[in-house]
Length: 403
Ligand SMILES: [Fe+2]
Ligand SMILES: [Fe+2]
Image 1 (cartoon, helix red, strand yellow):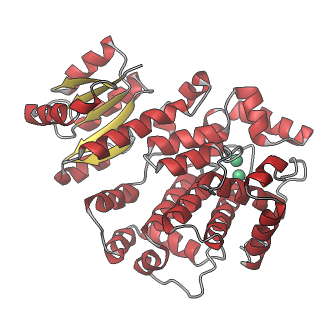
Image 2: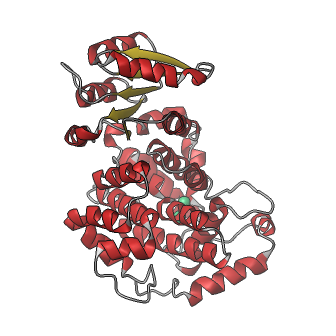
Image 3: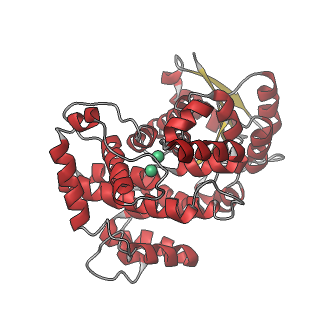
């Protein structure tokens, strides 16, 4: 089925340009164009739209106002802002209602892939009824502003680590948290990191960006009234799983990009648990009761009771946010990676790092024991390899309690 995308801009030239640029997508997308916010809302009242891409600066109803209305009236429509470089302030205002920002001029490849990825994110979740509940995106955490700024810098070219570090340093609270984290045992760095600029040089932009993202996501849920599980424990588990996936990937001499993907996915693999807890609190209480009473795995009980798992919900959010497809896939399949003979993918690394952490740390004796299935062990070449990873992770000090 064709997907419908609505582009909104008050400048006819921009709409013409988009129309021309996106002509190759005609077979896959139905593209609609509106010259103002009210015109866009009228179109949306008459037909279903999968994604809206709106300009920010428009006379009358501006971009943030339009996207807010879309969020309220059509919560399942994906909302992108396409803004000029000078519209930073306006972009910041629209933080709540926007899934992703793209900066003008935006090339075809970037625009198409960002839209396709966000629309595909919905397909990851099998139970549409529960998804609709979760997709009331006003409650979903939004990308932190500093993350958007770094992403915009990366899209422009290759920024120096110092430039990125300077941006991070402007957010005093965030830099303090980053420094605390990178100097903790989770990173096992040989020397103390004193400044964000240095953290970017030592760990790389992608690692710092994902650390920002996970700190932000966990902070957004810090005030969650009640939780079926312990938030600090989930944070520790996520940090350790990230560190373990990175250690294993490096031990296996994977290319830097793949090491980064595995790390980012492992760090964020359980964000779906936070989202589900925030939106389906009663269902979660029931699910964790069954998990503890019957010694079962969380994902298994979630699938049975809700028809979806935290893995899919987390992947959905990361897909909307435009994280790389390898990361989104690895999060979606972290309990059940697809067997791909030969190559070790991010999904395998997250899967095994997650199991190792559960095996080394027993969170709750009433949870089912975490052991890899014989099929999964076969897929990585046998139990020896898993044992080798376990040894390696322990040598790195990742299993020690004093974090
Ligand atoms: Fe999980
Ligand atoms: Fe996990």
